[in-house]
Image 1 (cartoon, rainbow, N blue to C red):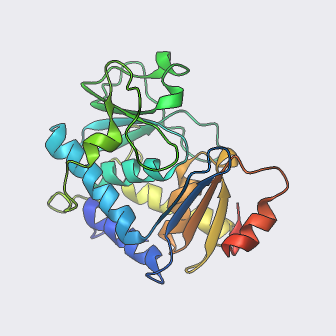
Image 2: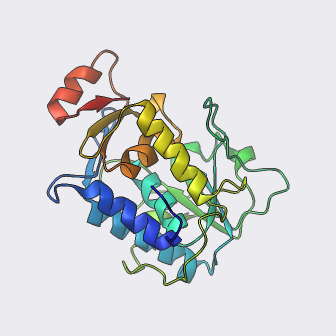
Amino acid sequence: MDLTATSRTEKVSAMLDTAAGDAARPVLTYCDDATGERVELSSAELGEWSARTANLLVDGCGLVPGDRAALLLPPHWQTAAVLLGAWSAGVAVAFHPLATAGLPRVGVGADLPIDVTFVASDRVDNWLEDVPEAPHRFVLGPGPGTAPLREVPTGYRDYLVEVREHGTGLPAYASIHPSAAATVDGTSYQEWANLAQGVAEMRDLRRGDRVLVEAAEHEHPVKWLLAPLFVGASVILCDNLAPGTAEARAEAEGATRIF
């Protein structure tokens, strides 16, 4: 996908439109065999969650293009909304450091200022030393449904509660050059597009594919989210999948590729 004349917000919208295909088919299906959670989102629904997140960052946190967000989150549909929302707001992101060969490890440096942090509720304690100081902190509680968290850690706000207060219209920014940093290490939007395209080509992903991804095996978002969406495929993201059941699940879900 060439981003030469595409703004950040337009790019995210175009990516979701490209992946839409059949409007009745989910663009992202998330299922967790341990909790029973199953969420199916069309491109329009994922776009709405992303836009709400962008508005949370812009209107709720006062962020502007070039500010930084840390995403200490596992593969999940809410993570997709946060990542795409941050990019729609022009916010550069950092992921929790990931040991993925050939892909950038976009972690949070000790001296790097962070403006907002998103952390999974089950990782707040485990990653306490890795959570950077930030004026705004949100906790996400992946689990069945979209109910508020029963307990919110001190110093955090419940993402699902806060994001619902914001609209689904994307922030109106002027076109920003694709050479701008999409992640805090300086990797640009165009470079991420190229990386996603390379992964898609390596995996022979094509428009209309349904890609089953085992979350535990592919934590880097370029693999479980960006590569499929950039070529117009949809994602079936499976967490806690029992060993040896991937092929049976792929057949049941109508998947055409397995990661």
